[in-house]
Length: 325
Image 1: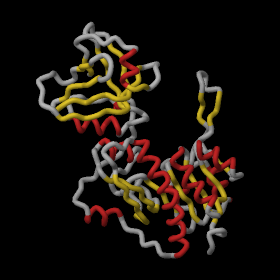
Image 2: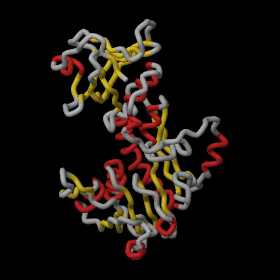
Image 3: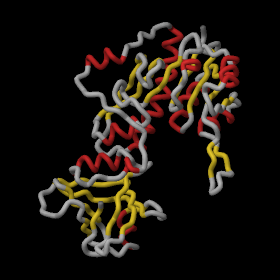
Image 4: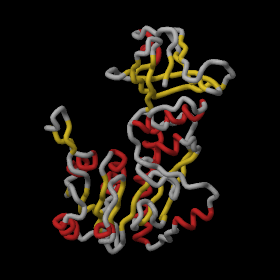
């Protein structure tokens, strides 16, 4: 079978999933349908419906789009079956019921933004950086019952530099992912795929499994009791979105929520209290930690725009006794 004859159904929602779809379409692969999330209500009253990035791209290319609320809905399952897919590809979508992932003869494979079996879950890029990893990657694997546990088809590794944040790694993996998806399709067509059970990969690795659970607002609150490197990694692991945050507390007890996007670490012996904030009122704002200081370089007060620390200090009257918690 040639790639022009292979009937592919593609499933995805966010920006990360657009690049793989784009490379399939521009590569001449036969995408017969695109499944994405229902349009998201936006605006003050939810009166404006925002289509997903994948839907926007699919409509631009004239592709058939399905947006089921319930993936087990009989009408949706029948419509999906009518597309007669030989292969399904999932990138940043939802957990699929067996009736969906087990439908095509060649199976369903997923592109996941980690080196499985590490970082199974919803936020693999964030957690790899938060944990201070120096390497990550992408994996294609066949779907089975348990989420992110299927047999691995292919992997690509990339380094994580000390200054990289989520945006940088997201974009690198997104672009590499597009190529890996087409390479995986080619390998399936050529019959050269030799999938490896994740259990075998676990035996070869001495590392403990690290999960990548969904990130909520409270997950993003900075714990200043951790050391300089841990907080530095935490900030870049959530930057620029959803962003690490803390409360900036004045001497009189009033406080403001502060999002932090970029910091600079300095290991230094001192006797200041953990969380104490010092500044010259013009160029720097630093927080004392157990093993040094963290200079805040980019931040955002609630209701304001993100800005460099110098701009923030020009409009903020810093008092003595500032601290974060």
